[in-house]
Image 1 (cartoon, rainbow, N blue to C red):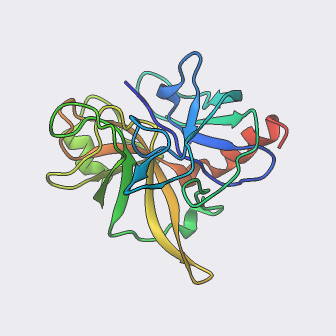
Image 2: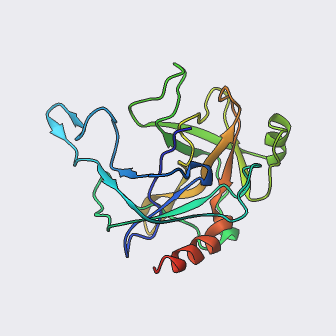
Image 3: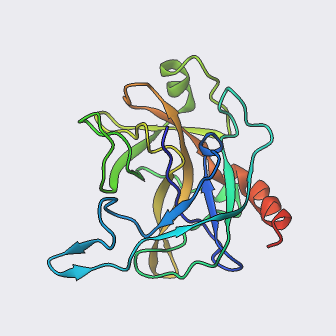
Length: 219
C-alpha cells in the first residue's frame, strides 16, 4: 500500500513528519510541495510553483505497541535537513492538550490514493468527511478492534482509499485571526473497496509520544 506524508509542527531543528506505522518501509523518502506527480515543477498557464523537494530520513520510529491489529498506527520521521517553508510547503498544527479537541462537524483528508476509477491519482485529491462514533466503525469493520486511540470517519460516497495511508485528517481552526489546519488523524485502514467509513489514528492522544520521540531524536 502506497503511503504519503505531510508535515506537522514544529518547523525548527530539521523537519518532522507524522505518518502511519504501517507505512514504514525500507529506503523511505519524503516529498514535499507536490501537487501533480507527473510534473516538477507544477505549472498552469505559464505560472509555475516552486519545485517539489525530496528529503532523506535521518531517523524514524514507530509506536512500540503497533501490531497486526493496526492499533497505535503512528510513526515519526526526522529529515536529514531543514525545511524551507513557502506557500506550498507549510507546517500543520498539533494539539498539546487532547482535552481541547474541537467538536468537528467537517473534516478533510488528502492524498494521491485510488479514486473511483480504481487507479491512483497523479494529482493531489481532497475529500470532506464526517466524524462518527467508534461503535459505527466497529460494526462495519468487525475484524479489528476500534479503540479510544482511533476515530471513525467517513461520509456516504466519499472516503480515503488505498494509497492515502499515512496522510493527514484535518479540521480548520481559527488561531490568532488566521485559518489553520489542525491535524486530528492519520489515515490507517478501511474497507477493501474504500467504502465509508474508515479508521484513523487519533493524533491528539499521541502528543506525549511525539514529544518523547523528538527528544530521543535530539530535538
